[in-house]
Image 1 (cartoon, helix red, strand yellow):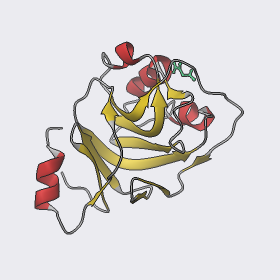
Image 2 (cartoon, helix red, strand yellow; image 1 turned 180 degrees about the vertical axis):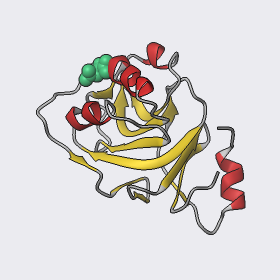
Image 3 (cartoon, rainbow, N blue to C red; image 1 turned 60 degrees about the vertical axis):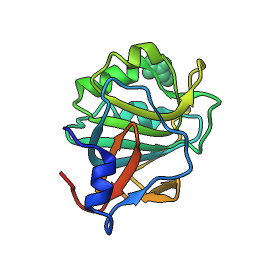
Length: 160
Ligand SMILES: O=C([O-])CC(=O)C(=O)O
């Protein structure tokens, strides 16, 4: 998939929503990625993230509302490798990751707010495929998201 979010914003100014006010970093090996939105909402517990990235994800991006916490990592190299094996296009996490040098080697987009070495707890908490909201945007499961080093945009319909 080759695109630049700036061009998509220019071409679809009336229909895209742009995530603003967040200092995203792209830790993955894909510099741009996009797909149909699936969501997880959780807080410092990556149970649902691990479970869901172990299911088929071709054409999909997992958007995780981690409440903005940088106190532990909702994804690391093992979960990310599993996501690649299952065909996921990428993950966007309003929260943190770890194992950043390994993430860079993977054919996966990994956009997060930052990184931290400590892993997440796993108490089986979190919700799957509900609308989530951060950066001024509502992510509806089934909508479309596109990300690159410029930022993250959302659209009700596929743009590519
Ligand atoms: O297991 C976790 O919670 C996160 C992690 O480090 C990995 O995915 O390798």
